[in-house]
Image (tube, rainbow, N blue to C red; front, side, top):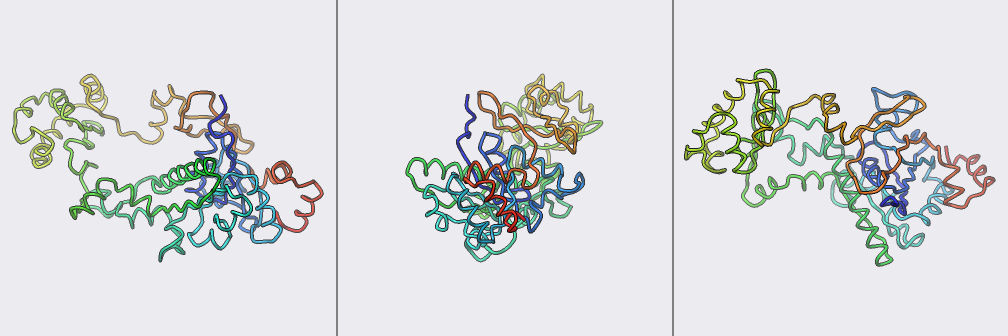
Length: 398
């Protein structure tokens, strides 16, 4: 089978995390991602992120940029702009993750490029979007988790507001922008007209408030931080300490609560009217949870994992990252892939969760800065070797 996005070409003016994560999803599905790297700033800043970095290689950069091509190009020069527009003429989309005011300044919007390619889809992922009072502000995941209310409801009730251990807004913004780009591309191929996609990290984070946002906007609900990472209204749905560690239990259905009570040898809880349904267990959580905590503390984590699995109760161990990568399910599904690399030897990273039937996309390392400049200009923009040499001599590639 042909890879799903084998006929898609994206020119990506991107760097660091959120943007490259978005185009990585497209690359893993077979899209050709031509990464434009600014020679004035020595390319994508992700190349230099420690701890595992040397020269212009880093394991951070490898994570976000496999299966892409790199072109070194100064878009601010007239000749650089000429090259860029010739690439756009043969592309399906232009993707950027810059400050919200930058696409207009660098002429990366649909109005700027429609005469070059009327079907071009121009997707911008920025901190706050391309309009509004914060459009010119830089936006990072940490800031978005703070401003969208995430940190106010994360962490121990007696501790400070807490950020997630992962850059979930950046990652989610990448996914959202990839969806938007594909939707714009579908419409462009159907109707013959491209568009702008204006995606912001802030709005992505707000949207992911989900039902919490609906409760707050509709009823003035004020979420509170919960001990043991508990769900705000479903009980039990949280972490429990065992005799030697921790595990998680998620009783999101009535039947799971009943299974748990039996597995804990506390069938009398099923006859207690206080705990008969979701609302009752939530209202009386302070009476119920001490009983459950005491029960879980009697056995080790491994013992409880065996008991809960036999009982059919949704549960899971709380792993360290290294332990997560060694779970038997990870091995069975080939979730860790190996890519040869001239500096790092072999880079082991996580496989794409986007799995469609057919042969998977062969994986290639992230590109060196400007590695594909000559190839791309010859094959996609029609430049001769002499013209490329002239551009190089004039500093267009840095």
